[in-house]
Length: 196
View 1 (cartoon, rainbow, N blue to C red):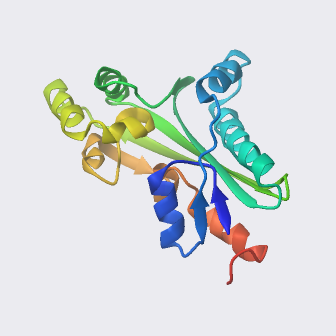
View 2 (cartoon, rainbow, N blue to C red):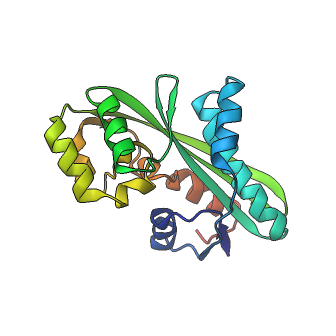
View 3 (cartoon, one colour):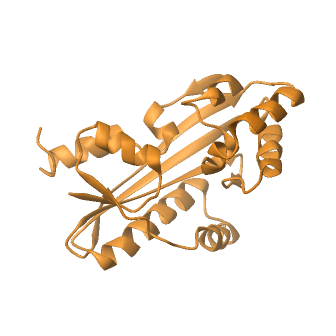
């Protein structure tokens, strides 16, 4: 049994669709403060994603010491600028305007704890180039898709209308959805946590 230290429905669905017996137990951490602290120290977007994923896994592992615990986090980086999930439709519009016509990275980190120790970690990276949709279309997109897009960094979801925002995508689809699923399944299989 895998414990998922996340409230992400898409991560839970991906794991269950892959035949993994998983139970969600969202780990409440102060992501904003941790992210700001790491940014102030000059941490890279990759390190920030990894640290946030580990903080979630560790918090849940402390409550379930013998469990297999998965912590995940996703960071959107436009150069050195880090994006968080938008809190309002206005923030979503502002993020989308900033991303128009530019290439950004999505970094999806996963950290696995077993017996209170980190045993595996991976950060998947995808590069996405946004097209240049008109401001009117972007306004309509946010209106049609709010609040669903509030759960996604960058204010888009590729699995729905958000795919129309992009002109080019490089990288693993599961990484874009927030979980480097194939490397995780490989590790779980090699270690005998799941049958192969």
